[in-house]
Length: 475
Image 1 (cartoon, one colour):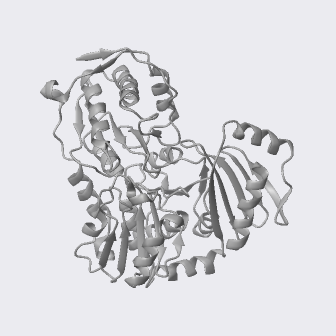
Image 2: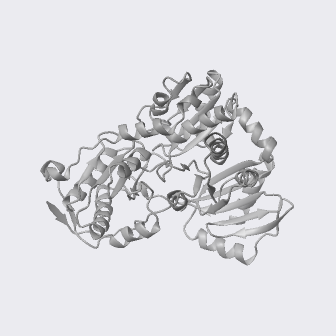
Image 3: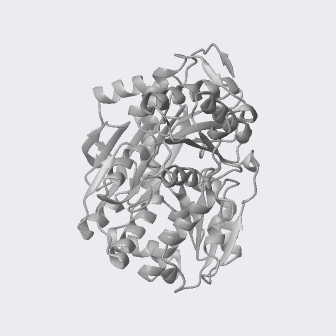
């Protein structure tokens, strides 16, 4: 075993884990440092820990980073189950719960650009660790020497050979309603964005009668120059395939396959909260499931309008799926949604899941009776009003957040685009809500040096105009 003196660089856990630029802040040394902090946390709570599941996605050096984590864990006497290949984050999360482990570590930077990598910690429930856990990791950094043992020399009892992929896929097959999935025949386009979604959805739909075309399913650590985030600017190729293949619906998963977005049969982008509304409607109508609708601050008001009609309680949280997790754990939530692609479901692990989400979205389109996804979007407009969403991301310089917050609190706007501001929320960024349900949110990312401008209005042009107002306010 080797032990070395630990140092404490600037490492912090954001909305879902720690991320950094590879070879700059995310290095072999910093990964070992964070792993030791996690090991200290685990050992302080478990005298004989059951084990840690460790996975990685398609990013550069994922195998190496995950092995470094495993070597630190076994160096601290903690058993490890190390994934043999790149796997989706929800598969790692499910394995933690399925095998009754004390936690999980996933090496991924999720939807961030290719130069990033990161680390997520999963609790025994398979959920993302919240701040009460990650703050302990941060406090532990550098507090004890890094203990690491090469896996070849580790005690064999500490190396666990447990299935990871198969139990997850078997569970998904049990969760989905294959009778319902087989009632229509869609041309389905799946875009894995060079991430670990691979061809899972295509394989899970095998035998249902759907014609499935999967694109960008191969491994490429550079993501062929795209950012593996399922937002419109990164899905132009997907829209081209939808039109070329006469697709009825397209689903796109992000780099680690825990997020989901969709396109309709015209190639138009479908935001995740609208997907969530259709799935919630389907689960209510066709499965008889009940519960609250949990959404983050940046989500569409379509959720609120649907929930009011359906008699569902709406719970609004700060941005970050970890804020949705407690409501899923309690069993009181039917569904939880983020603007940024995260979806969680009752009776599943309390985790984002782009693979299960894709199946449930297709199932909901069929179960509610739509012939294609654009029919579903027209239905939402007809029933809950036309609402259009827009988001802009920009680089943020240090100190901008504090300066902006002071400025806006000193002189908040009274109206936006001629609509009276009726509420200002500051639980996560600053959100201005207007009398007609239009809104503007200005929020600084917890994982990147980025400020995000989110807006929703009755027209796309007005939504864009609101984000421009936000940019002017920040400037």
